[in-house]
Image 1 (cartoon, rainbow, N blue to C red):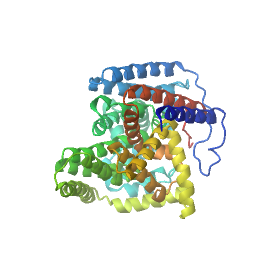
Image 2: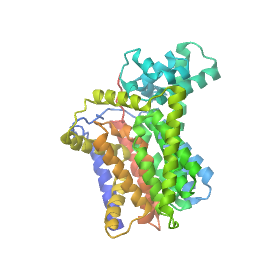
Image 3: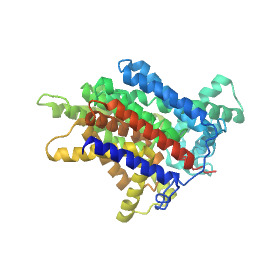
Image 4: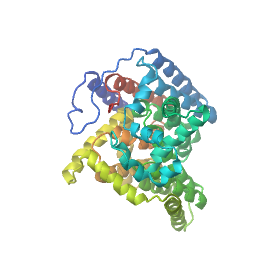
Amino acid sequence: MKNKSFIAILLSGTALFWGLIFFRLRLLQDLPWWYWGYRDTPLVSPAYLVISFVICGVALASVFAYPNRRIINIALLIVAGYSLQMSFGLAEGRGLEPFRDRILRSGELDCVRLTISQRDMLDMAQKYDEHIKQELWEHDYIRTKPPGTVLFFMMVERATSWLTGASTDEARLENLVSVSVFLFPFLAMLTIIPLYLLARFFLPADFALLPSALFISCPGIILISMDIDQFLFPLVGLIALWLGGLSTAADRVSVALLCGVTLFIALYVSFSLIPLLLLCPLLAGIIWLSRERAENSLKRFGVILGAGMIGFIAALLVFRVELQYDMFARYAAAIAAHVDIKAWMPGVQNVIAFGFVNNVEFACGLGVALTIIFLDQLITTTLASGRGGGDAAGYLAAAVAAVLLGLVIFGKVKGETARLWLFLVPVFALVGAARLVKRFPSSPRIIVLLVFILQIITAVELKRFQDLWRPLI
């Protein structure tokens, strides 16, 4: 496909989606189990958006003009992404209430309630199932989680209470919510650091921050703020992926061991990150094959993979002995609760129907522009592989597609994937940036800027008419 045709598809596809949202057409909402309805959210204080756009302009100008100033540029992108999240909430004209609502009127309220009611973190880690059975929870959210989700909230609450000296439950709750409003959007942007490090394996150093520019402009990342799927899971998941890539790029068994431990910790935080068990070795293999190796390289790669498995198993055993944590029993209970909540019925017809809905919804949260770029890379890789070609970024796209297929078949999900699959967004941004660099070798930064603008406009439209937000209470 010629570049002019590609840009035409990029612009027209995005414009069609804008029209769909602007005129509130129910083409998507009429799909079975579509999660996000239209929700009128007037932007009464647009000045906040203008300020954040100026900050983004400064950050992108620095990234484009001075690519060697990597630490400064990473800091600028973190500030830019943080300002985008904050400005989209402040634009409602309700101060910090939109951020507070996303904790106090969502499924995460169960985690907050349990955090405030318990003071012993070790006891919580060792007797998690006992604690969650003691009460009837508002949203059943907590029954689908491993202990790490609640323990994260407890760590934040303990730190804030220690700093402020809060002792009453009311003061502890207020501290937790007040600090989280500013902390969680910042944590979400720390994903930029491992994303940059991972991008170094796929892109020249001067272009390694382009994926981060695409990442911070993703509508789902901007709008689904304050949700643990947005601010923690992508960060933890990407650290594990980077360690997996580093273990093969540097041929380091010790890094592979650490990667295995990190993967276990990721699953201790959320079972949503189980797909990393497939994506991480695939990514490591892609990086391994992209470098020249000796004849015994396959054997050595097996050693690296084995070290990763040993690290995972060692962490599992330590948690089993020291914290009495049975990952398999907790997963069985969590997936049973998930199936009950989602009313999932097995069968090929459901897998196909909801597989379509889930991928379309995820694409809307990812952004139409980035979705089109990813599909372009995937199609190009498929055609090139038939001729014996392909590159590392293309094979990474294929690996992500395999993960999505696995999620369709085994995920037992009915909608809400714009939130649930956010941990994959950084990898999509990486694939997208690599594709733009290869397709437009003489002007990749200009095209990245175009995509950034398209994505931001999409986020504004979604904020105004949908918001990717559905309060539960």
